Image 1 (tube, rainbow, N blue to C red):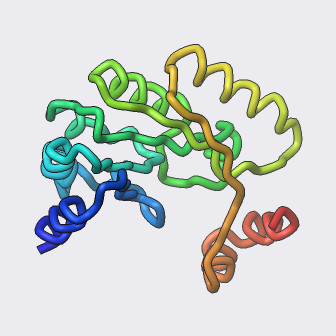
Image 2: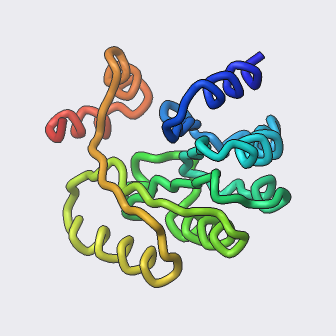
Length: 175
């Protein structure tokens, strides 16, 4: 099973190993259905050299709050200016919801990181990103903040253009 393989990986390594969940999809978006964090958070707590990194744009943190936090689980929110979220991140939690969820998890004892990703330039972008930084640093104290840019795998731009039309085509200028 997957758990057996992870145990084997940890037992054979003397290095710290991080398992990223959510690099290509949101690790918490369907957690209320899959309940994976209720299994994975306690599982990773037993490895001195193992870490679980949960990447999300969600505010779906009830399962994380239902289990004991530990220093081996890091929850990393992908944040963006509210205008970018509203226009390009359809169906995701808004900025205030994400920050509130991060604060709840931080208060519960989880390690919190922030990814400002993807950075997108739009009219008055400076004000939008200043608001994002102000809210983030006022309400939570992330252990790490990283910046990312838009990156698409082959074929993803075509899918985005089909789904978002002109909005996606305008993004091509920033790629």
